[in-house]
Length: 421
Image 1 (cartoon, rainbow, N blue to C red):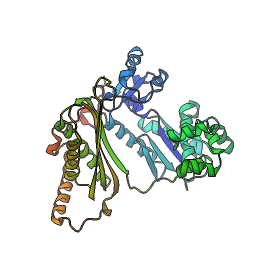
Image 2: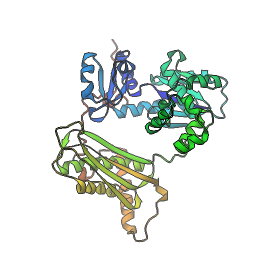
Image 3: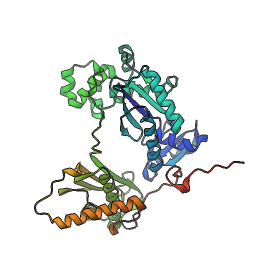
């Protein structure tokens, strides 16, 4: 058996923990630079606010219905996610963190007499420990567990936990479950399925195995088998970390100067290297990109990108940051206002698997390794902004977060204050 613990409207729920007066009111959380709605309370969804809706398009709804709006506070959300994870780890020896608001739990080999009661207890303890509403679905496969968790959000009478294992129960649910909502079925696959007359997850399971393999490949076949109760997607316990790292932002204003844009890219690269080194990996390739504001029809549009290949996989601060700056300066085109830029480092391998060239300067490599290690130590002891490269300029990202809540759990200065009279 597998369980999926899914935090309900997670970013909104985090804000409500410290602002309980917002319960029952429409609330949304915006993406970086206060651009689009990336989290919505049920009340906001009922008003017709769609996921990813640009703020400028929903401003009238926000004002008319007094929707509470927050800038994204990833430091807070990340810390609250860790607290939920610690609670889940009280129940099982291993969890797979799937995203900031979802985690799979391995129930195999555990002595659980009542899975439905177990799911409800996990949900109740998460609420008691962290005050975050969590839906817990339990079933034979990870895909079915995700569907079971989604039922908890739709039906409050389930009290946060749903055990879905009997064949007749699974069939009843799948007959009503839209195929486009099934985990692992992407937009292109949905379009093909609709052309084939497949509307629900149950319709998908009725297709022949050979047809599914031929049209949707191995990933589609795995999903098909999972829906039929055959576990094909194992929990990831490799600890290898992510396979690519992206750091990008939309800016609060358009940038027209190459130096200023390069400084922003240098800061993105520095943040990407931190994440790369934290998981003890090295990268073979990096992509640097920038684009104009696609919502400004009155201005010229362009989109730039440049791939950088490293002859030897690297996690060196100086090499990655200088390469990112060089790539941006090479592709920069004047006469445009750039609204977004970013750095993606990919083709990652374990740090221990790096094969060095015979023609490398060994002494220089050792020097660079020691320098990067020293930077890691300084940032760890004195904060990530304690030291930075000159190419980063001030190191500040040009963004807007005017509606950001305090960092209640990560900054001493923002700790909630309680007065007792």
